[in-house]
Structure formats: C-alpha cells, structure tokens
Image (cartoon, rainbow over all chains, first blue to last red; front, side, top):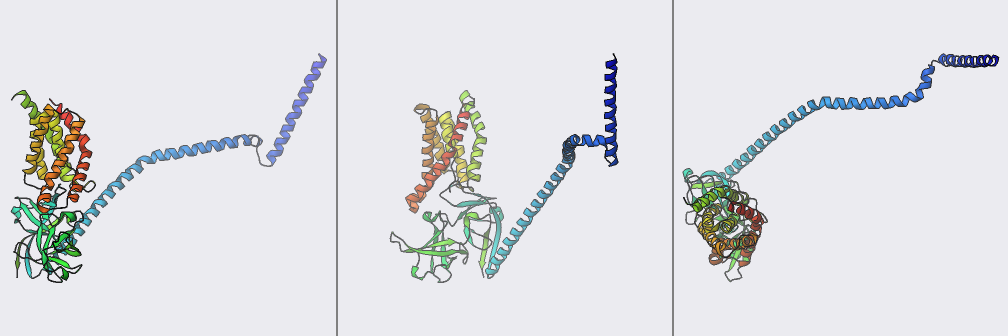
Length: 281
Length: 166
C-alpha cells in the first residue's frame, strides 16, 4: 500500500514536470509571436487548406460560367443576327454594283453604235436546254414585249450571243452561236473579208465557232475582230461576234476556214438584251 | 371505270409528282450544273421502269407525259420525245407482259437501250444532215448514257414501289 502511494506520487510529479515543460516552451514560442497550436498544426493544415482553396476557386469558376452562360448566349444570338443583316446588305450592294457595271457597259455599246438606232429589251435567262447536243436557252420575255423571231440577242457590251428562234407570249427561245443550226454572215473588221460564222459540233466542247465560206483566207489576220455583216437585213451589221483564233485547212478539200473565239462567254450569260428594232442612219 | 383503268389512273396521279421531280433534276438543275460535262437524262429511265412494272398501257401514258417534259427541257416543240417515249413505253410494256421478267436485269438492259436510243434521236440531225464527226457524237452519247445510269437505282426503286400501288 505504501508502494502504491509512492508510485502515484511519482506519476504526479512526472505529469507536473511535463506540464511545466510544455508551458515553458509555449511561453517561449509565444514570445516570438507564434501561437503554439498553430505552429504544431500548420504542417498538416497547410496542404489541406491548399486543396480546399483550389476546390473553392474551381467552384467559383463553374458558378461564374453558369451564371454568365445565358448572357453570353444572348449576346451571341444578337451578334449572329447582326452579321446576317450585314451579309444581306453586302449582297444587295454587290448586286447594285453589278447592275451599275452592266448599265455602264450598255451605255458604252450605245455610244459605239451612235450612228445606229437600236431598241433594246433587257431580258433574263431563265433556263438552259438539257440537251447535250444543242445550245439554247429560254428568256423571260416574249412577243408581249415586242420580241420577234430572228431578233439578235447581245450582251451589255454588244457581243452577239444568239438569235431568237422561238417566241411565246411571255417567253422566248434563243439559239446561241454555238449551236450547230446557227450561221451568221460575217465581216472581218481589219481586212474587210466576208464569210459565214457557224456553230460546229467538233468545236462544241471547246466553245468555238467555225468561220467558213471565205473569199480569201490568205487575207485573214489572227486576232482580227469578226463582226456581223448585216447582209440580208435580219441582223444589224457591226455586232461583235468574236476574234479569229487560228486558221485551218479543211481535210475534206473544202478550202480554208478559221476558228473563232466568241467575244461573249455564251455559256455563262444570265442577263442579255434583245435588239427588237434597229435602223441604220 | 373498270378496275384496271382505275388502277392505271391512280398510278398516273401518284407518279405526277415523281415525274415533276425528275424534270426538275433534268431540265432545271443539271442543265446548269452538268455532271462530267453532260446533263443526265432521267425521264426516259422513268418510262422504262413504268413499263416494266406496270405494263404497256401505263408505260405508254407515262411515256407521253415524260416525253412532253423531255421536249420542254430541250426547248423543243412538244412532239419528238413525246412520240418516241410513248412508243418506247408501249414496246417495253408489251415485252414486260410477255418475255421480260420484272427485275433489275430487265430494267438495266431496257434502260441502257432506251438511253442509247434517246441519244440517237438527239444526234440524228448532226449525223445525217450536219455531217458532224461520229467520234465526237459517240463520246457525248456514251458520257450522257453513263451519267444517266447513276440515277437508275433510284428510278428502279421508285418504279417498283409505284408498280405495287393499288
């Protein structure tokens, strides 16, 4: 029993010494401005705090994104609508510019033929033939607009495209120069030579014309302008048909002929003019 | 109206939108956006399909309608292909009722022959009057036939479906 009391006493002494030691250390650390509890817990808490802070920042970003999503989408829709409006305006301006260019070219055509009086009917190409062996198109005007059979069809620059070969009340069919049924009296601007320009199936894919029935092929000049001769009175004279590209000899013994490059880009025309009447002054 | 005539009339009504769609492809779309440099002919294929799956009367009627649309698409007076496709529809339909079996083989053979015949009609003037080079004509005709056959499977399936319309 005495031993147990001694043991208890020893234990109490040790405990007291420990407390004193802790207090002393605490007082010493506190003296330096640092809380002991903090100092002991800091190595554990710091990484934990770092993780928590990162997590909170991520949540803040997500929250901000969600919160701003609707406003961003609304702004996006508004900008898209504005872009669509601007694109529509741009298309309209482009059409106006192109129309202006066509009118300028038409004015140039009229000035070049100042001595002649043309009545021109502006028309639009509404469809092309589906045949792979012909070259015709349909225009959006007919006899109701004064268009008649065999009227010449030209571009705004006055380049011959073809001739009206079928007329309805509101539409008409134009056979282009490339078609094999087409032939036009021709006059060389530089040499005065005459001949006949016609469509030819061998040249169909190349989109060229054949100039034959020449009085004298030796007089032809490469690059010379081929005009309509106006003989017969069906077509006005002086309309530009194309330019002589090269000379050939007919292997069948038919003499010389020339390949003519049409002045108009016939397969690409969309708006043309029908010469409904003409008078030479 | 008897049962067969009524059935034919119903099928003609059912096929009108289909023919208009083919006309749009041939006469409007592909006349400007050529495939491999040529415009495919799809209306004559429809006549083949109609004749094989529905007989000569129906084939002749569809031939007339498709022929008119073909002439329209070619900017020609409505006569040449109207007559040609009507006769083709009648002939193919008569063969389908006797010797030909309904199926892809019959359709393919008659389709190719029809397209070659159409190319010949289109180029007859070039061959016999203008004296155009045969190699150039053959080149265009072959390309036109080959490109037109691209649409043969669709035309075959639609024709087969319409053939089952009661």
